[in-house]
Length: 166
Image (cartoon, rainbow, N blue to C red; front, side, top):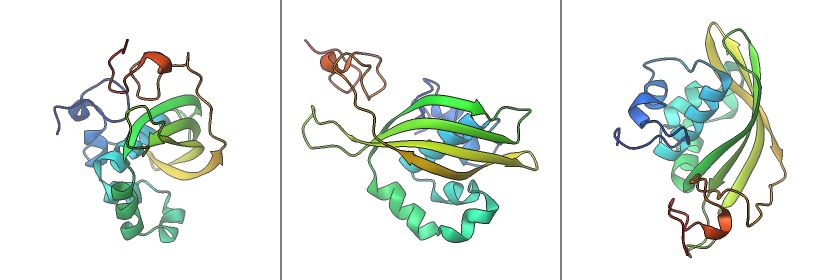
């Protein structure tokens, strides 16, 4: 598992990217890194990390069982970071707007579902935490937009596994 590319879309190996964060070896250095690691935790089934990376004031609202179900129910396909605001080493607050693609139909050409959110993060005692998020309307992808799969190929030409189709 650790020799695969990271699910967060960084193009780095999981072992060099989000794995040390979700396994508690090191802290996320920024709000965006925490966002990416939380997406990876959903896609690779790390529910305890999802609970631990929630802001302490929010933990009572979530249960480990609910997070386990979320990890197992969704077939997380790809993550696209749209915008970050603050959330760097000198900040205590940050926002990350993202699209997460999940599920989808049984055919190869089916468009997956989409979670479009503006997430808010706070840093406490040097560690970043997910505070909350605002769900935004889905973004319509045009045929000439980059494919949701993260390949960089236009949607109309992509086979959704990173290979350009004829």
